[in-house]
Length: 139
Length: 110
Image (tube, rainbow over all chains, first blue to last red; front, side):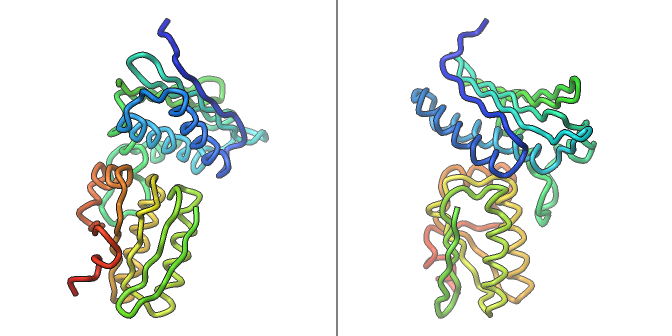
């Protein structure tokens, strides 16, 4: 097992308040792990917020229970890891998973391409009504 | 996140303070639409106090750029901080949204 040096998380309804709360957790994480270089903080925080925003904007509930968002972010000796999950969510539509950068006049659709440019690995898992993005960045 | 604006002789300056994310993006669109509707189609968005922008914020800036151009003007950005610069470069939007050091410099050449 890789040692976890610092860890922060969030769990709550998938809405705008969650985005601000997750961003506050990221800021707190960097306070806990002040040795993480600015460039890594900036890129990783951007990727985590993009993934969380994708859930808030696109995830649809699988049944009556509303979608909940769960974020677990950890600092390890040589990498940053985030698990960003949508609970009670349907499988994402193919066009919500579009990772190519759109035309310059497009006003949306850059999130996934941006995530891919910001992190070392992006993995998507679906299990029992939960969609999980696992983002890692080597530091 | 908060927005404020000031209309000068030759342009309007919209100040964006805080995180320009999916929560703030619709507010930016509203403020710029109000500025353009008020007759100021040359708009500078001052990002000197915006330390974070995501793709929703970027999308709002692109929408505002289109609105300003449709009204015969333009939208320029100023005071770009490192994270915002990174997002603009990774999305190749730095060529569309030209960054100026200050709001005064943005329309200083014309």
